Length: 207
Length: 230
Ligand code: B12
Image (cartoon, rainbow over all chains, first blue to last red; front, side, top):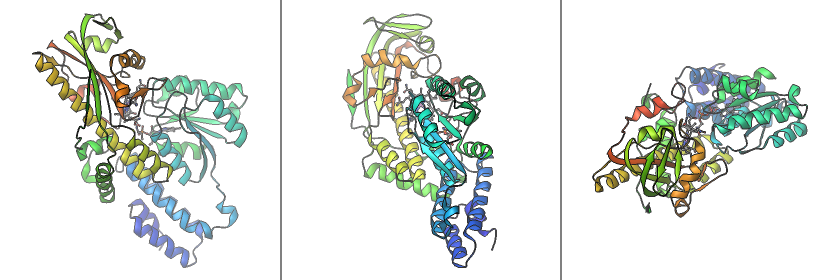
């Protein structure tokens, strides 16, 4: 039944969601539409997260369920559909900062939403972002940072991207506990996101 | 200088949930609560917490409006500290840590594509540091009462009015390497699940209510991880 899978994911019924996905696959349903239905569930989760019904652990839990479903149906997807379609994205915690957990969650959420993510890790110098943009042609760059000193590192990273002549080729989003609109302006980024859901919606909007 | 180890940390589930940004326990999915229980149990079974505190007590020689001078002529620059210790005689400088094991396990979970476990265990680690900070405050209360003094609320470099660069002079004053804590070039401590603080001892020192720390923080309006609800 259409909608059941969406609901199971939205209600975080892991076993039920996996059972439904397998059942649909076995009964010959188009794997792409199964994926579509699952992603609709994530959308509901996103709304519940935004209105405060769900918290970060629930968001991650739902993404893990979606990941499992993707693994189940992947072999049945045609090769062209198997290739990541949403787009490429480079992410890292900027120089001087070593906070990784917020960034890792953003990486995971982008990944389950179909992005090909290049995670540069923590304490990433500006040049490394520049090199990775050249190497991958990724059109989206995400900078994470939780410390006050990360504001300057973000600015320096944006400037390095500009100096390399790549600023027009990429959209840059920033995030981390202290990041707000003032810091976005200061750093010269295109947008900021207060959570991983926002990171996904920004990235989707740029593709 | 004093090193305290072998401390038992008992974790309150509410504190763990706060560190996950959750305020209403009742609204949390039972599966997630069960996972928190499991991770809490494994934190103890696998001995992921190795709590230790290092501290030393120094006499204060002068309190300026944005700096404090100690008897050994170390200067600590902080307007927040000055306002906290107006009646302080002595200053304790403390560093505490739960050690590197828990965060290694968090990294393994995240790398092993188990982000939920990684996130929840990270929250447990932060709650453990909170609890260790409380323990440090209790120790300082003892130090204070031995001297017939009171102890102030703690304040930490990195909060508004106390630049993170002050970690460097503070780390000259505590034998933090003995508990395995060092400073990275940015002034951040390694292991990550560590905290540093100063506490004033004196006849009349400032003691703030829990919520006041949140009220004074630059993130008071937006933080998901407040100590006290808005
Ligand atoms: C938990 C915490 C701790 C814990 C754990 C720290 C750790 N690294 O593991 C403990 C208690 C140990 C701690 C200690 C300290 N802390 Co602390 N800590 C925090 C806190 C509350 C959360 C940080 C965190 O990791 N959150 C986890 C993630 C998952 O949270 P999140 O923000 O919800 O993540 C989302 C968004 O940020 C977003 N996002 C993240 N990256 C990106 C990227 C993009 C592109 C986008 C779009 C979105 C995005 O998506 C994420 C997922 O939804 C912050 C305050 C805050 N509210 O951020 C202070 C904070 C980072 N700490 C601070 C300080 C000062 C310290 C100490 C220096 C205090 C001290 N002297 O002891 C120490 C330093 C520790 C060390 N190793 O040196 C300051 C730093 C200020 C500064 N000057 O730079 C902060 C900002 C608090 C404050 N306002 O004072 N801390």
